[in-house]
Length: 247
Length: 175
Image (cartoon, rainbow over all chains, first blue to last red; front, side, top):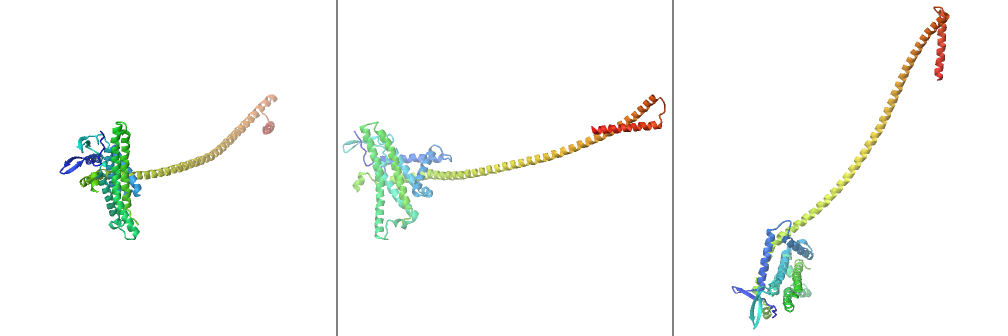
């Protein structure tokens, strides 16, 4: 029997009326993992890097170079790095944790509408719209807050509400709509890619087990990286636009 | 709209929970990773730039030192050559002086020797003539058989010896 993942994340348990889903559970695991990793880096921090610190230094340096290219200055790149890098790292590790053995396959069978379905204990956070939408909302809000901090409230919102001319007013309305569209595109792009990957893996495993999922898993590793990079790059671009005064 | 959101399982509590997750991770990574790594990368970059500057400076200093060294060696060589040339000239001069002195001394010694020899020779000739006079007188006395020889004979012997001396001198001069 084929168990196609459901669009909505499955509830695993409840804490005081709060339903903990399998995607949220994996998010927590990712946070704990990254937290331990960060602590290890901090405790073993050395001016001459080795091992894990080397890997993180390389990753941060690559992100800095990337954002420096977008912002045009190293100073700005360093200033906005924590926000952009957290998006990248959180999305990347959530995506990669989603294809670990046991994730999506270990669970309990439950009856739903007369069908027995597998409810996995863990699922990739990216396959839950709550995760992607939360990140999209944070990113769009973050972009606007950073824009206000950089150029001031009135200057920033001047691009949304402008009465200089009918055209600028219309452009402002379009800008406002595009902010909402950004949230939708951010969230659905990531959700669509990761959820589609999960479905594809399940179908591949059903039709040609052990063989077909292998190249698809490799593809999912790549997709996970690309989606994290796309999310972080787009966030960088939007921040770089927001923090510069427009004419 | 609500139906779509329900279909996707969107729940504000879960949204909030995921948002909180993001901020927890943000603060953890900011405190433990970004801060130290960015500062060490910045420091390393500054150190590398300083190192490159120092290397450039050291290369320039080395180049200058090489140039100074070459110039010093060239100067020293020139000076050495000049000193050697001076020494050679001085030695030549000294040699010439010494040779001149030696020649002068030699000439003096030769002249003195010649004078002494001439004196000795004169004395010997005088002695020889004196002895020859005695011999001649004795010879004449024995031949003639009478003693003593008169003053007139003595004057003859003296004249004969004088003539013999003139002939000998002429013969020496011709030699």
